[in-house]
Picture 1 (cartoon, rainbow, N blue to C red):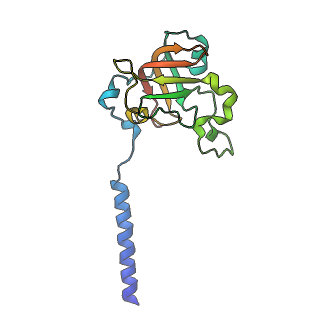
Picture 2: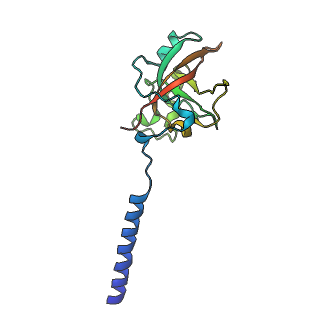
Length: 179
């Protein structure tokens, strides 16, 4: 009996030590130490643009081909990303994501489904293009290490369509990384 107890204790100690070691050795995703890949370097702004305006204000004031700096949070739909391309939507910071509402258990808080009546006039589409004018062929999430609901400041050229939608052809982006 005493021998069995010793073996069980030894197994428990080794298991705990093994788990602790694995946790310490596991790589951590630290977005504050993001090193951009070659394709992203030219778009990374090192300093926060002080002349940025929120999406709603930019949409009201901007004409086609204006140079702008817009700030917003990534989201606006269940999937704000364009697969394998560097583009996404942002939403005005005045809108509340579902996870910011007491008692809301929405599994996709970045779709802003609680703000549907305001959402259309509070969104902008952000595109990162190469010298050929085509979208970069790498997903923005991977290229810039960004996530839903993350705040971004985007410098670029405004493109307006007939319906008043706003697309920004980005020339630079500042990403607000973890706190």
